[in-house]
Image 1: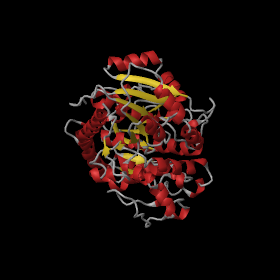
Image 2: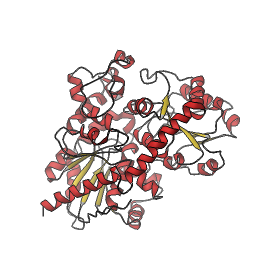
Image 3: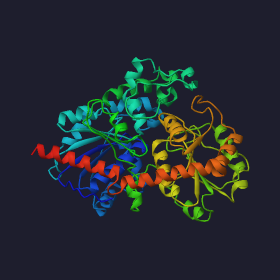
Image 4: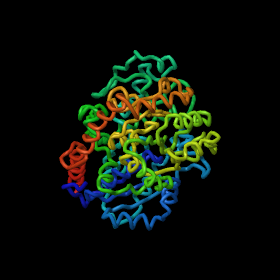
Length: 489
């Protein structure tokens, strides 16, 4: 994806939230800016940086060489997050948010350290959940560009969390979750109707006394302090330009620039970052499977499930009769080592492959993959749409519930398990797994989902290609940053 606009004198500092689901899209976005000529300073925490280098079996020098070989001007910096080495980080999100809130002075010191070899900072591209960048951008006198790694609708809901609190929609009660009729009408932007079940799960009543509840409300206040807003989505999926403008409280520009992982993929490039060692042996196995016959199963990098639930899932996958590729992280069973049902591996060995991690976009693009059983994280949801693979949603936490509901009810590209969103303790039985998988993989339901998602796949590709909405929106952003840089000369 080569832009016609270059910006050789521009310098974007990119600061992701320290979790793979945030680091990856911001890395992809940084690469898109670098392709257009930006110098990029990519800032992560030391804990994240060490995990990334370990997963890639490389070191910082080799990573710098890779960027240089691809013609990208990158500088990688890291800073301590203030937590002890054995802290759970994403498994103890509230404490992680509190630590990150205090990183402003360290980040500012890191960025202002003398280095005459790089251009002056033009802007700070901040993950929407890194509030400390507001003060840093103000002190440095540069625009704060908020990048949303979730869908537009959830971004708008989160931005307005304190308004929803004042109106009594937060905290979300158990009765609210079960209601199919209650609709929240005070949300701005051209987005589908929002129900209580669509609000980020950390705002549910059971979390009120937890750090994560107040942390998300705190972040919402700083998500309104922006000079520019960018969303990892595309207009054809989410209501056009009017939807994104629902994010803009102060009237600043708000643009859809995604899917940011797609341009690299279309050019045969991989993102430079993954926090997990990838098993690529699965592609030979996929090559041996019939077209659209394989169910791909993955719940992302953070989700955990009980051992009992994983056993039911395993038995359901066995019963459905379809080949399946299952990404089974070592820590998915609530942090414990998982033992699959007795005899499961032997009984399914001729049509199943279990791996610890793999290249998801490449898997979803493989002709043999016909469905995706997913936690509905936004990256996974958007990647499935981009590759034209219909989904079964099994949300676990945070914004996954709204992504699942929209995929099923509005975009009509997926199915789900009845009642999971309203009851997080619900056990999905092997019979339910078998039934829903069969609905997705065969018959009229699956065919309709494939027709719908094929249209979105085509639209997403057009969006990131020259002349497409996301491509042109990104060019507009670059032009606006050039104007700001010129005004300071």
